Length: 145
Image (cartoon, rainbow, N blue to C red; front, side, top):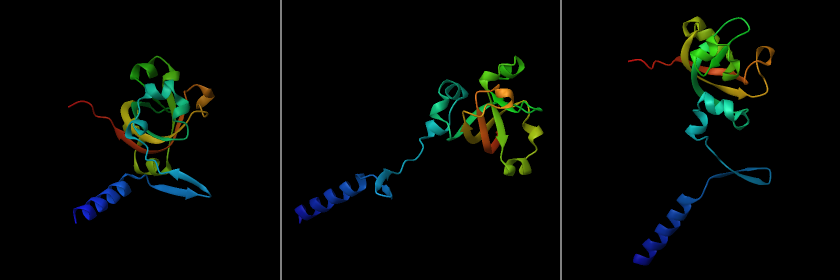
């Protein structure tokens, strides 16, 4: 009886430890969840390694400025005020966000956003480090208590 239990336990542990796979044509691919540290990133990481995030959905915190030909999120308020556009990313909001929220309530404030990063689209006159497009989350980042 002990041996049967030991064998069943061994098989169940083996089954639990195997990775899930999906088949695409004749290839097998592992299902991968995006690790939180790869989704929730700092603007510094985005500036330094944009190719790592190209085409991926990301979440980040920064200083949002909305103006004609200058909609962007910056690392710091000072980057905006000093015109350091390389420390900023052009922003494009989803239709859902523009219909639900008054964007002026978020202008010139620190915000948290979720969108898809495009390193090749560099905003007005190519001045920015890339574009965060199809933004589906826009909330104030309230760091004061």
